Length: 170
Image (tube, rainbow, N blue to C red; front, top):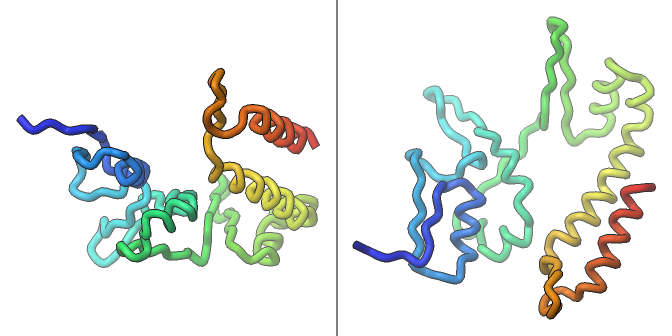
């Protein structure tokens, strides 16, 4: 019987990334489906038509991971959709479309709330600031709460956490 350093159950994009970062080289990755990629997969479910299995989730993958693993050189292709989301209501024919065009989104939102439409740019700016801050800290070393404090400086960690909490209260 062959021995492995690690066995990873599931072949979704998170498991594939974990396998790449594993310090061991003798890894068994098990996936029950005929294809790996999980939610970040686009498949031809009906002949001639490709569907996202929630491929937008791949857009949450850290750019640092994509770069460190040279994923574009290994064949990663990302496709942007002209419409990022559609929300239908229980009222027949009523829906909200969203995309990257702020003017378009404000017109769509105005169908439901003029006030929300008017503050959409401000809301988007607020979200962008939070995302920028969050993105910065996601690529830092994990907080080290051990008594030794070997990794990321524990005092700095608590200072950063305080800053994040303050921003959350504003």
